[in-house]
Image (cartoon, rainbow, N blue to C red; front, side, top):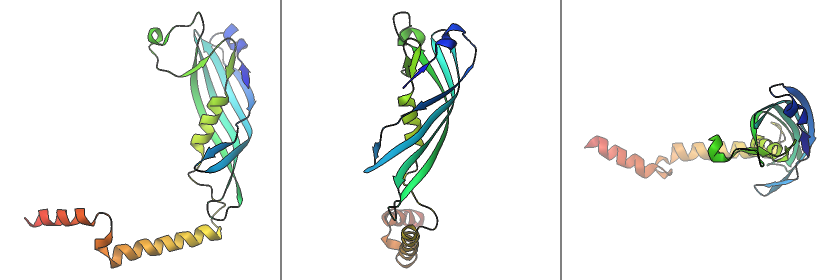
Length: 175
């Protein structure tokens, strides 16, 4: 969906508040489909010469499944942002003239915010969804991992991945 920024283009330097509802399509992340709902960008935008400054907060709800028990999990996405969009078109400066690297672009009096919303939401997601501290599958997995890790390190110190490096270090110290 497009955000109409014509008010800012007519009044350069003036900050204008906005609320923008958007949609993020389902995303395949590490083999799991994550869906998003209630995507809302809110904040302020202002125009200066050939750029548009937009700052605010993205809020959304991501829907996934617990990594342990596979129950549905909702994760609240809340991300602040502060971005500058550069105008492209026949009167816009080229990348070399402006001295800026590739970034967000807009054309005319409307700005596409869907890609910004997608980027912010996906980068805020946890590595894995968990239904909570009381998840029986994750708590059992954690207790097994702790036991295995401690047993290997205490009972068989020469069987860890860096044992060969440890032996080299020990030989160097003796010489």
